[in-house]
Length: 434
Length: 152
Image 1 (cartoon, each protein chain N blue to C red):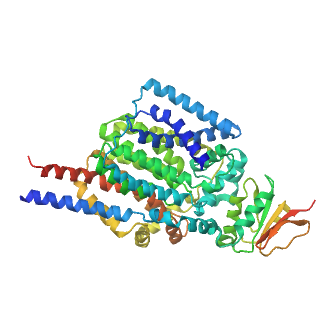
Image 2 (image 1 turned 90 degrees about the vertical axis):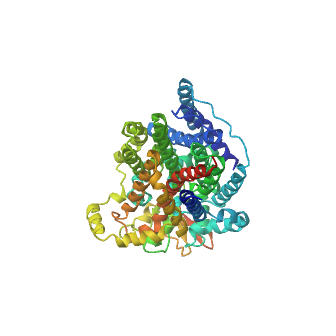
Image 3 (image 1 turned 180 degrees about the vertical axis):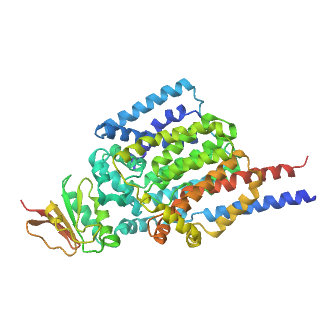
């Protein structure tokens, strides 16, 4: 446990100058801590990736030296920018709600660290790759290239395996019992940043309530697998771009693009999200800000190029995709009927979302229109995959739909809650005696 | 009260209910129950990923401790076919045997025994039905399985 906390502290220490180097506005301390962890995790990924590509064996010395170099470069950039200092949040009665949120977060910590992760995808994909790489002292191409291991999705991006390896290298051996801590840390970091970003939207009490409501979806229940980093990076990335749209700020969009790039380094769905975000910006008519999304693509290019050079196969891209799509589009009802009862969320949740969106839709500003379109496009992409999948359809939906939908639940909830908050506030203001 | 005020109040009430519905739907009571249940669940979850092959976790962990890095370890399990059978145990062996090469007994595409697999192995991990092939000796065993080592 101590070594997990030390590793997290190291990642935060590396991430703080990177957060300051990003062209975004001032943060509160809790937002800075969350962002620093997320950016530090991204930095560790790139250090291990570069060490692998250059043939330098992984060790505590090479990893820490690489991280130090990244932090130094970021600090130099931040000092040139004259980054604004973080502000300390003031405590008030509204923070009592945060006590309940903290209790739930503590519960997630207990779940995540009760035992080594039990998810099959942890054992068969993310965990096994990390352990193979750790033993090899770098990316184990022989494992990834072996046809026997095609089911381990060798083409998947490597942020999570590299992050496990970061914890293992600092610890000195594989942190089997504490592997779930990584999932918890992403949830906590994401919630802290989200809370900071909500400060632009609402006063403290509704902000605390919104944080409490969003807590269970920001913390992934799928311990040990890449949903946790994807949920966090995707949510924060989209919210930063949304803020860039609201404030016509290129810097905020660049910051969002960095988080979106890290989302795509977590899972391939993150690549689809970059496309969805670009489409959302076009619908919101913010064409001028589109080039600011380039860092999201640039961050991912090295892995996209290298995994193709190594001939790592994408199993969903098996032949016959167009034929399957055409056949299933002719009769989409069986797929829709299979998807509806398997969302993993109860009817009351979807009823609340539907009502809130229906009421809020007329009041959507450009930034909220962006959020709604991005979320809807990503949702349709997720559902669309089942129209093309070469796998047995019912099995594929049973084993993945709830999980992938979880990736955008925070965005779905924010689409419902952010515009309606302004409606509630507007009505309340109208009711004040003059 | 004017009609617009009534309408405002109705919209605000509807949205409050919608937020409440979202909160209730998203709420995860397990994150509170876990405070009382963690100890019992910890024991249960330790074996859960290996539940279909009882005892396999211990056999794999013990074998991992007794095999050197780079060793080629044949995974001899009686389960068939690969999909949902042999593959279940083989993939878990790949995870546990860090830094070793897990050699499959079955051909994944044909579900047939691979006759070259024993020849390629330095060690064999077997579960329950352990038969020691010529040229191998028992390095470790318990009631659920054994680790066999190629004799010098």
